[in-house]
Length: 205
Image (cartoon, rainbow, N blue to C red; front, side, top):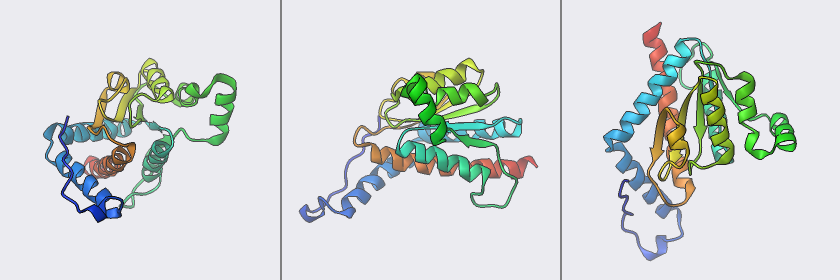
């Protein structure tokens, strides 16, 4: 676990924007110097690239802000990130019709796993996002992915939670405070992975 000290601040900064930026900067600075963390992002990026280059697809899921991140990840791959290039196969499990149907008939814990069961295939990858690593519906999706012969990439925080043990690859933000800090680092990891995927296809072609 990284020790992330807060930078000094004055009393008038306590409830202001500067405190948030200092805290985020402190966490980010520590992550940059953590070789194991950087290696985890690089390994995950290579796994995602390999999946797509082999004709597989990436499914993504998460709750709340993590769902927004899952959707952002998928649209940047199927749409565009930085460079003009072919669309990549990535789908966020985020359809309101699917979610409300499954939640009504099977319960909220199944809203992502049913999607994985429907369209996941061996050789695909599930990007499972949970700041705690213990979101029940994300865990169910990970279990469904494993049963389909898919790889699981867990994007977690804190101690990784139960999702850590279900993940073939894990990118963990070692932060025990509020989840917004973890989410801020998650989106940086997502952008880093998408950039790596784009670059790998340039090299691959």
